[in-house]
Picture 1 (cartoon, each protein chain N blue to C red):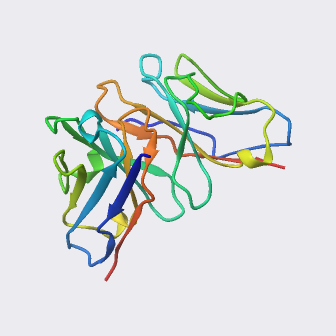
Picture 2: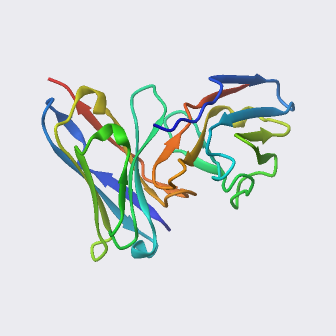
Amino acid sequence: EVQLVESGGGLVQPGGSLRLSCAASGFTFSSYYMSWVRQAPGKGLEWVANIKQDGSEKYYVDSLKGRFTISRDNAKNSLYLQMNSLRTEDTAVYYCARGRAAIDYWGQGTLVTVSS
Amino acid sequence: SYELTQPPSVSVSPGQTARITCSGDALPKKYAYWFQQKSGQAPVLVIYEDSKRPSGIPERFSGSSSGTMATLTISGAQVEDEGDYYCYSTDSSGNHWVFGGGTKLTVL
């Protein structure tokens, strides 16, 4: 059974940092593009970033302006999102997702709240 | 930055056909994907590559694309189909992905 389990969310002050993790199981992690998607409270889905199977290519939504970094550790079947210089508008549920286009599995999401 | 435009809401009676549109300048050359999201749940892929249906998705869900518009059609919509629907595609570079703003489908 495919499982994606996010962790690392929580309350952080503006300007702070957080590192989200996603533990993958039930499939060959190293064979798939992986993505992060977020959803602000009461708002729509927003694609954040994705990373190629071997980590050699990474793409981000332009609005992040270099504050976030996606990475992966295929030996640990894990996906990460390092978030720096957090702003109140980054408050959202962050989903880990398998794939780049036809995203077929999603985690349950982890809530990040940026507030003073 | 690239944008996909959807109507905010669509409402139909049970058994009627619901059509949700998605417009974007790159759609003539890029596939559209559709996700269903019910309240408090993670999204579910219902259509990929414009018109293909993943296993387990009912046949009443179909997709099409023509020019700059992709369309999700739910033939004989059921009450359980209520939720938010998002189209998803990439810009002309193929590297930056975007979701449409979402369409709230009401079936009553």
